Length: 505
Ligand code: NDP
Ligand code: HEM
Image (cartoon, rainbow, N blue to C red; front, side, top):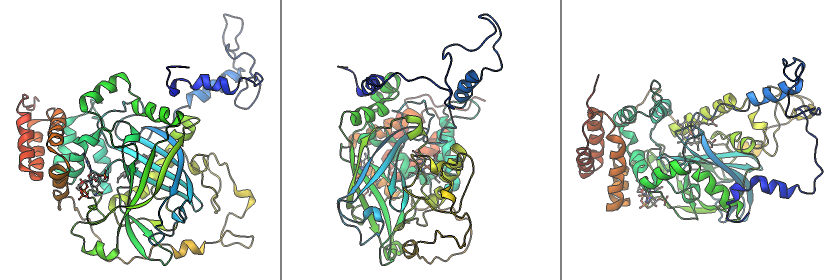
């Protein structure tokens, strides 16, 4: 097996592990012996197939149903398993068991993903990357469904379908459409912070091991005294940030479309376990009231200077999936899966997400998706029963409440740790997308990027923006100019090297 990557040796490894096993006989899916795996039942060697060939139908019907709907976003991904270990005490902020003591360890599943394109797409396209972590805690599942960026394109979940439509294929031509893309972004300048990040160096990470993760949305933590703190989650790579140059990424897209999947699998299979340092940022309720920016707006970060990172623990991945479909494709995350001590905040995008993921999981995987081994909590006790693919009917316990036959009952600890907040306001439809969009985008462009990074960002933008119609280019250049006058000017200059695209219809 010399000179081969671990990912190439899966079948050879299988043989090695089973060399002492007796040869097994093959069966149908219901365990009935197969008679001839490689021939269907026919009337003579040249005749019709017979209807009674149950074994043939058993194989074909299963094959016909092998694919389920792919995720509507984040379809292409890689998964792995490992653990989260606490290294620092944060019990003053949260009473969640997952943080309960130094050294406390919780099993995790992680799925990394590319947001925009289909399951078969190339790993190295410019895109945000998903970094979703499932914690199998003693209080049930906690899903921290983050990305590799601390921000997002939009401030309100009602725009999510539009935002995703313009990233994906034009519904008529079925190719990416740069008019759609820049038309939307230039009309929704709340996207500018994420757009500058997207066209910056981190827009194409050099593999999933070399990028950070961020919970991005604002969450709440509740401590044992019932005090609530707002919180951001960060998980920083211990492998070091590494990005791909745009040209190199295009070459890899052609030569090795599964570059990031391969890298992760090989690293774990070789015992080179990737890890991330896990941090929180904390904002008190009082600080949130006086913050100069909206702390519940996911297009904003909480500046490190005002809200320093507080170390919490380590995420380590030390196990590859044993089957991609069962353990990665069927892995389903839901930001609404909180545990006592961790909860939501008024962040509108988070609030929207609390609905969307459970809804899509039921569509993609079915009513009982949470009973699939990879999604299942350590225990669940409730009054739901039945539905497609029920695995666990809770041993005959009563399916109604209240009852006289032994519970289960409400956990007083969960009640004590549930957030108690008071909000008031006039019910209405508030479009906040035009407030204070440029301060943080400007900080990223002017202060975090150096000259060379700014130039790469401009070249990356022009590579795509040159394909949009002239009037859309102008509007988008206007948005870049509001970040920094020279930014807009440089994009315009570079666009000038290409023939302007006027409407041809
Ligand atoms: P800081 O100078 O303290 O933080 C800048 C942060 O920018 C770094 O810590 C790093 O985040 C991140 N960064 C470095 N290079 C790049 C890059 N090429 N592309 C994207 N991010 C990069 O300043 P502030 O906290 O005041 O933030 C300034 C700007 O930095 C923000 O407007 C935001 O755009 C960006 N940023 C801020 C983060 C935050 O949570 N405060 C997180 C990430 C980006 P990291 O340490 O997470 O690797
Ligand atoms: C996947 C909706 C914003 C991170 C998904 C999926 C939906 C969705 C429907 C598919 C899930 C599945 O099929 O299992 C939304 C909506 C959003 C939003 C409505 C905004 C209103 C975000 C943000 C982040 C994020 C801000 C990051 C912080 C992810 C990740 C996945 C995902 C990582 C893939 C999960 C996996 O690996 O299975 N999203 N999303 N999304 N989303 Fe979002």
